[in-house]
Structure formats: structure tokens, C-alpha cells
Image (spheres, rainbow, N blue to C red):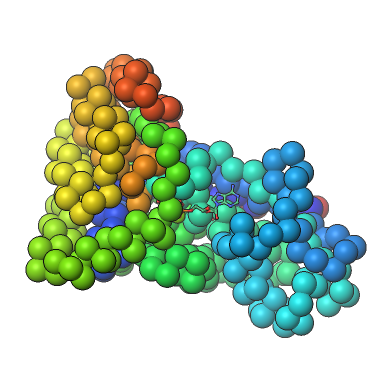
Length: 316
Ligand SMILES: Nc1ncnc2c1ncn2[C@@H]1O[C@H](COP(=O)(O)OP(=O)(O)OP(=O)(O)O)[C@@H](O)[C@H]1O
Ligand SMILES: C[C@@](O)(CCO)CC(=O)[O-]
Ligand SMILES: [Mg+2]
């Protein structure tokens, strides 16, 4: 069995605007998705999840099945359910610590971990930039629109700038994640923003430019670890995310509760509409901020930024 894992991510600045080529700064975090692949005798691709509930419905696993199709083509296999030339199949088992549909890059982490696991399984030996490129292609095909951010961060780990895909010096930041527990599909939110932009191009283009500028200015303060200025810019970014319709009542409650408890800055992370917000904190405030988020009705956990990208956990 081959097991690979890949990290989730947070956006310090720039989600949504990055879909239109503006600058964004994102960082991997220390929660991961783990994907195992093994050969089975039945000529099929089987999904197993927690509890080993075999779920064969491809529509429930669009990211995984798109990856499997790409490897079928790479390994020159027939276009049926077999996944090896000997006519055998594969079982894919996913265990993820990343809340789904929550802005923490669960889709990208599952996609990248699956690509790496199948890369080892088929012996294709893809370099990291090819894994990131394939992951981005998969998100594009499933979501319709997608920036390379989540898949790039999940592949390489650490702090990255998009669109130039530059890995920056590691940023060790104390972060509290607040989860509204409301699933929000990235595909749907990105498409809502696209419609808003079509209806009001002059207004929304300027907001996208302003978000990109926040990332460009913000990266200088990230690099010198000036957390209070980073927090201030995160708050401005949050206002602009609200203005493009990706906020929600619950997200705002968690954002304001965390600021009241002393967070240096707080904002939505990822697509918004539900899912998670992040609060940048001083170490001394971490548990106070986490408690305030819980009192405001959210789940809260303290996470660390992480420099670890995709990796093989087990290959035997
Ligand atoms: N553990 C998992 N098992 C199977 N599929 C998963 C898992 N985690 C995520 N996915 C897939 O990813 C989809 C959610 O991805 P989506 O892009 O909407 O949200 P996200 O990646 O959590 O947030 P964001 O893109 O804003 O960071 C799920 O509907 C499912 O298809
Ligand atoms: C909303 C978005 O900017 C971030 C999702 O994590 C979409 C993307 O970059 O593909
Ligand atoms: Mg996603």
C-alpha cells in the first residue's frame, strides 16, 4: 500500500482576486489529507472512506476521479475501469483532517495527495512542478475556474506568492481558525463573484486591483514579521471580501468576536460564503481568541503554519 499526504492552506491575502491574476499570499498549515492507494483484484476504482464505506459514485469524488483519469492516460491504460495493464483495479482510501468546503484547501490537499500516491503507484516519477501543474488542471476541470494557489501551496508547503509561484521565507505565525461549520462550495462562490463582476465590471475590477495591492504591500510586512501591520491589512482585505459578496452573517460574527478578543487581524480564508475565518494573534492571546470564537458559535482550533508540502508516508 502507498500512502501520501498533503497540507491544507490559509490565505493571508488575495483570495478571489487571484482568480483574475492579482497577487495573493498563502501559506500551508499543519493539518493534512492522507490518501492511500492499493491494487485490488476487481477491475474497478473503489473509494473507501473513514469506516471503509465503499462508495463507488464518481460524482461524489470529482477531484479523485479526474486525477485517476489523468493517470490512466499517462500510463496508457484502456478507457474503462481497470487501472493496471493486468486488468486489476485500485482502492483509494482518504483520511483528511481538513474540514471540507471550508476555505482550508481540502480539495487541493486531497487532489495533490492522490496525484503523489498514483505517481508512486504507477512509477511515473513526476517532478513537483508537474504535480502542482496537474493539480491545478484538476481544480480547473472540476471547478470551472481556479487559481493555482491551493494546489501549489499543497505541493510545496510554506509561504507562497501567486501568480509568480514564488516560495517565500517561512512565516511562523500563530493563527486561530474559526469554522462556521457551514459547507460552502468554492465552485459556486467563484461563479457568484464572476457574475457580480459581469454586472458591475468597473466597480469590481477596482476592488480586485485593491485586493492585489494589499497582497503586494502586505508581503513586505510578512517578510519582516511585522504582525500588527499584517493584521491591519488583513482587516482591510476582509472589508473588500465582504463587498464582493463572499461574507456571511456567521463569518462576520467570528471575525468581530476575534478582533474584540485582541486578534491583530482577522478575515475569511478561501472562498468564503461559510467555512472558515482566520485570526492572526500574539501568542499570549491565542486561547482568548479561540474562546471568543467558540462563544460566538464557531468551532475554533489553533494551527501553525507549516513548511511541509506533499510527501510519501508509506510505500511498501
Ligand atoms: N476528505 C475528502 N474526501 C473526499 N473528497 C473530499 C475530501 N475533502 C474534500 N473533498 C472534495 O473537495 C470538495 C470541497 O472543495 P471546495 O474547493 O469546495 O472547498 P475547500 O477546498 O474545502 O475550500 P477552499 O477551496 O475555499 O479552500 C468536496 O465537495 C469534495 O469533492
Ligand atoms: C476563492 C479562491 O481564490 C480560493 C479558494 O481557496 C479560488 C481559487 O483561487 O481558485
Ligand atoms: Mg478547494
